[in-house]
Length: 379
Image (cartoon, rainbow, N blue to C red; front, side, top):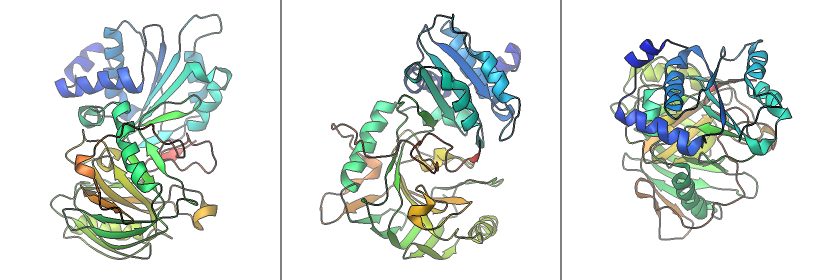
């Protein structure tokens, strides 16, 4: 961890600082008698230092554990050493992980914490850690995201068909098979024994079929290294989709065209693996970083390649996931004349449905707190 002087030289602005405190108050729900462990990769040491500093202001001294992304044979031992012993009195253990591009060591964390009471152990995993995430990703609390996600699920979980139109030119016809393919609701709400994956604010499923035109005028998010600018505001990607497969795309930016051509050249990468709706209205503008933050904006995204179900259900697998994200959108379900307006989504007062998956994960079984789709995962 950096020295206090170095941390103060890079302290976040007022908006980011407010996001850090919302993150600690609502997503992590840190109490005065909790023990907090922060595990961070080198690329996220500054945001980890910010979180540790915020906890220090509250009188909580975080236990800091460095980790290498993806492969780190010594991480389990270091994490285990940071845990409280059995004689130590504490309310809960809160484990916060911060990484920029990866979601590492899920199985290791699960194994190390297995001896603890799951009701007293909260794990909150953050990908794309950085100032942009704190400035916009945590301005909306989990309770509100849950209510907004509920509004989407109420409309879509019983539907057979959707029609989606976005201001930028998107016009899609979607067929759903809700008896076969489950919905995902990433709302930042913790449940015992599960990981919270952040940033939150998305509802998604695997569509039985999609046809039409997608005009992605917000951003790209992809689960591989992307060095260029992920924003599409000035160079939208227009994609033609027929029966759940990409048949053509066009973009005026040659670098993005080259990158997408490479991605779509992978086996099964032209298949539609996800239909997603962003619900986090704190995220208004795209960021240059290849980030989950962009797909949480109120809008529609189609994920090509890797899906959010099991290979047995979908009949294929793919090692790449490319999200093309469109701003805003109006969604009609079946013959209901009252559409969802994603940019002006009204939170539902009803309880959140229980037939859903908690996060945008690709775990192959029903233990759905594994690694996050769109990151670079490893156990």
